Amino acid sequence: MSETRGIPSVVHPTDYDIIISGYGPAGATIANLMGQRGYRVAVIDQFDAIFDKPRAITADQEVMRVFQEIGLADEINASSSPHPGTDFVGMDGQVIKRFYPAPPPNQLAWEPTWMFIQPELEATLRKGVARFDNVTELLGHQLVRHEKRADGVKVELLRLADQQTVQLTGRYLLSCEGANSPIRLRENASVEDLAFDEWWIVVDLWIRGPIELPERCVQYCRPSRPGTYIVGPDNLRRWEMKMLPGEDPQEFMKDPALVMKALSSFVDTTHLELCRIAVYRFHAVVVDDWRFDRVFLLGDSAHQMPPFLGQGLCAAVRDAVNLAWKIDGVERQGYSQRILDTYGHERKKHVRTVVGHAKSFGLIIGELDEAKARRRDEELGELLRAGKSETVRQKFIPGLETGALARNADGSLLTGAGDLFVQPWVRHGDGFTRMDNVMPCGFWIVTTPDMPAHEWSQLPEWRQMNGRTVVVHDNAFTAPSKPGNGDPQVLHVEEQDTLFTHWLAQYNGVAVLVRPDHYLYGVAHSVQELKSLIAGAAKDLFDQPDAAADLSHGVMDARAALAQVSA
Image (cartoon, rainbow, N blue to C red):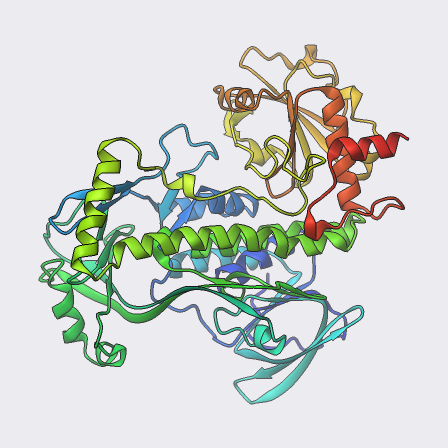
């Protein structure tokens, strides 16, 4: 187990495949993902211990699915609580907007949105890292310099306990250092400012006695002091209050009494125990380039967003799982280096959209002009009453739109490309389990019993991708009678309900090609279209003589790819 708190006794120049700078949620997640795959990983952080105060507090089903992949979801889920939904309250105390988690069935087999205490979450992620002898923690070390080389990177660390320098080399360097990432600064990465810049006071408190509080989270859209109330897990509650013109952030940091006075306009503080006061400058920014040869930016190193959508940590975890399978593909599956360019192209577009939504909610909440706020209340209230206001939180989280996805000849996405694959419950022994638990990481075709798996299972492209097939049956499934049952690359499962069946029917499809990060490469409506998807994906993944597609501008049409392969 990796219990290392200082530099190993002997460090060889090429001991590490992956060097991770920053051991917050992004760094800990990708350390688990790469450690699980057997890579030699060094994870560096200047602090000796986890920051013991809550920061991020909300995450979603896609994040829990990633934690499921690394075997930690059950433990994390046990200490989390479902998100109760959010009401936006106008100037007169009326609800003007609702923002609730998606109703059942839970398409990814986890709560759509859930609440957590960040120090507990990070502790679980680090316990996960400790399972892997191939991962070394270098706590109390600061990365002060890095140098890119043709075959990797060289870094210089400062061991803070004795101010000694240590040099390491690795094949990849991942910056998970946060908003003030030194690696990003040294790479002179340009940043797109999405024009949101506000100071907010964040107050975490523990309930220590009887108190009357809303059952749901609340966005107080009042010009006198915009604020947010968040129902955390257990007895943790959070208030966020916008600073008003003329107020000094430093005054609030120095004087807790000033903070509690502002808080008293939202709640009776008699039975609340202060946990943390922080003053944040909420930003909306996205870095332009996320890759610099073998150096990559993840999490807040690559983007910062206002907290009004609860997607900051979610975006960091999505970064980690997207990059992990692509590095693994290049290093062990023979993928082209081109696939690494799609990391930033895919994630930047996705994050920019999410940041835009978070900013729009922040502008609704934070309006300080009373006349404009009154018009806002009337307009949003009318939309809500007319049923024209989108209330489902998950509808504001897009699929992928760029990168390694199947496209038509005109560049538009093929049906379903970029959407998330669902996760049904399937029979496992005498009970049922989430389907990802029986599917090794990789490319999958998921289909129905009517599709002949032998039509594609031996295709050279599919074998090159080391792809597998899952045939989803209803509860009348009898394994020995099903054709192809002896093929180790074909897995037959029995679905508990009809989640997959109904989901696939929405696309009028017969099969889907699923990427290792659970996003769809595309949906097929026939065996021939499925073969086209396989051929297109293979061209995107591997260097081939006629593969001239520029992934920075989208991948080739799958049908055109098949035509070229067949020619």
